[in-house]
Length: 162
Image (cartoon, rainbow, N blue to C red; front, side, top):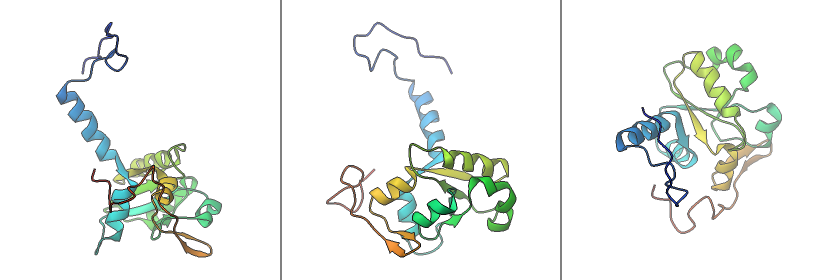
């Protein structure tokens, strides 16, 4: 792949020209192979039957107790190598999450699982966006749900139509 050359275009968006369609398709296709978004994970978990993957919360016990996705497996990144084989089926893909976009804990967890031979995706937005989009979550006290944030979830529609 060739490196885009800087131009003297007055528009800062086009100062570096867009990639070729083929390069863009390869890049975005690769991104989808590595990431899943909160809404897609929630829809798959809510559908009847097996979603075809397991969800891993890679945060600490204190964070898990504060709130986690229903049905997720608690497997802190620090314990990944020691406990993954006892908790996960290597034939089932894994989706990891941590706090949110400002945290790379899910990335570290996904890396550890990939190095152990698991097929893995990272859930973009993490627990923060799960809660902000209004999906139910579990705490020590039971299930909770917040009103969706209109900046992250559609207000008058079931989904964003992406």
